[in-house]
Every structure is written in structure tokens, then in C-alpha cells.
Length: 314
Image 1 (cartoon, rainbow, N blue to C red):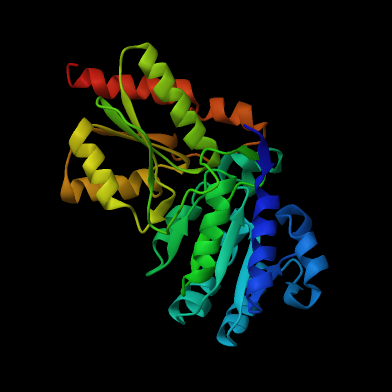
Image 2 (image 1 turned 60 degrees about the horizontal axis):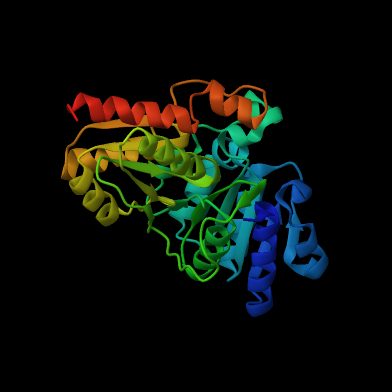
């Protein structure tokens, strides 16, 4: 299927929303080209604010706009959106019960040559701590468009991880999405693979193919939202397969793996493993090299799945 640049889909969706709602605004921190929102500025110059290299101010201005009835979509690199302005987002936006839509771009290894300082492996973990905050990561252009639309309609703060680069469509154009709901992409009986994001969902699907070559049947879930987590979908799949493997472009200790482990420990304990970053900092490299270097690729997912399956004597 044809690829679409995710940041272009993000901007096009915001322009469509802005045409329907005069309160939609874009707020940037000197990264408009990187976020792909230059054409929004051209179309709606009076509804686009660039605060400069001042990420805490990005959130503060957005909070003020929200208090005045606007719906601000604020974007910057995910490392800055989380680590650099966490307190402002926590207090000025979330504690104040406002309506700021914060977007963190280049999550995890997608930061590539920007390197370790700009490679956020901890942003989901930080955002999971914020009471009431919706935390999600689209996996393809269709889910991105529909989830941005859902975020605009939802009153309350959101945090979205945005893969900026081109991605292939996984879903048909008419697929419907809701915040807090995942999607079952492939049925299976031997293990559940729960994946997140535009990098890891395709890798999970490839891993399922590798497992099929080994005679094993993997159920694949695109979880989409880490908070709220789609407990109904996850628990039903865990009951069916009896084993769960998470796959994320993030630290396993505080991200998707941690969230799923907490759910299973409370509701349905079962054998579980996690593919993700294991207590390491980011590094410089191509996305493909980083995928292999950190053990995130399809072969690693399939091998870990086999370890889980064999541990149960199947």
C-alpha cells in the first residue's frame, strides 16, 4: 500500500478540523517545519502561534488559549514535550482541567540521527502518571487522522506520540477509532502480541508471519491507547491464548509493558514478556540499525514469543 507522511496527515487533519471549528489552533516551539504544520500557518495565520524555543511556554500559552475557549494542538519533539515541560503540562493544563492537545514528535528510535538526547524512551511513562490524561500513539495514517479528530472532540488534555515519517496504511479509510480502544488485527491461539505505534505494529505483524512459519498462531493487537487501556480487548485475548507479549518503542518498565503487566496482575495473571528498551539511553543511528540494536525487530519479537510458548510446554 502507498505510504503517507504522518506529519502531513497530522497537518491536513488539523486544517480540516479548523475549517469546521474556529476554536482549533496550532501552537509550536520553533519546530513548525519538523511538525509539518507550515501549511496550517499559511491557511490560518491568525490561528497559529510560534512561541520560539521555549517548550514550557508552549504549554503555558496553550493552557491560556484553552482557558479562553480555544482547542490548542501544541507540538514539539517528544523529548521536550515530556521531560522539559512536564510540570507545566501537569499543573497548568491537566490539574487546571483544561483542554490542551499535546503532541510529542519523533518518539523513541524514530528520532534516529538526533541521537540520545532527543530519543525519548520514557515519555509514555511520565504521561501515564498524569491523572485523567489520555495517552495514545497512532500506528498508521488512518488511525492518526481519526484519533486526532477524536482528540479534538474530547474535552480534556491528551498526549499523542507522533511518528513524523512516512507509514503504510494498516486500516481501511472508513475504519472507526475511539480514544482508549485498541484493534484486533489478527486472530490466534498460541500467544497474544500487543503492539504500539507506527514502528512496532508492523513489526508485530511480521513476527506473526514468522511464528506461522514455525507452526505457531499469534494474535496481534494494535493497542493504540496506553491510557486508558483497552482492558476488555486485552483480557479477552489473554483468556484465549494464555500468554501475552508486549512490543513497544519505549522503556518496558513504565510504558505499554508496565501498563499491561499491571492489568494482568490484577485481573488475569498469565505468562508475559516484554519487547522494548531495557533501561538504556538512546543512541545515534538509522532507524533500521536502532531497531536491531535495541532488539525491537520482528525476529526478536518472534524469538521471545517462542520462549514464552515453549516455557508452557507447547
